[in-house]
Image 1 (cartoon, helix red, strand yellow):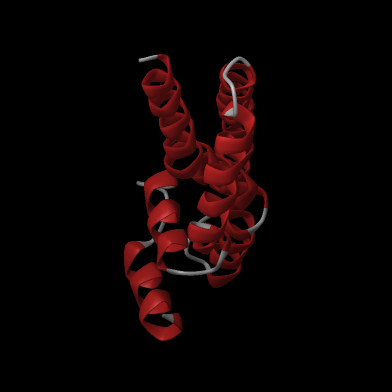
Image 2 (cartoon, one colour):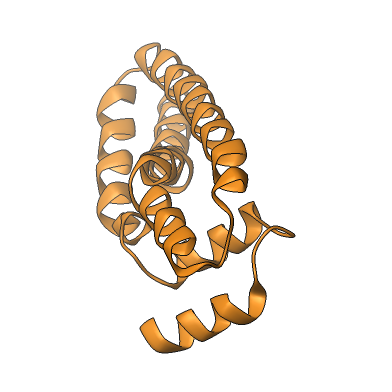
Length: 135
């Protein structure tokens, strides 16, 4: 019965690394890269004002770093207490990084996150025109 419990815990850690830890870390990295560049492009295109980006972007970056650190620390702490836990967590995390790498690319997901972040601050007609032209 102990082996079944260990198997289930390790399977849970692998799934957590794949479905939770990897996307959260990639999203945090994305706020410093892709999302920041996209916001700068939107300022240049006249879709959003620079003051809105200066107000919200640092808050998103700080929140992303804090959440990532908490999630990764909790996962590491839990995995280090279980036999083969670190191996399973690392495997799930690595496969998740490969699977969700599109988060780091300039794509329609970047546009959706931009829309969610700056809900009432951007010119929707100009954004739609830009999206039609670029994507």
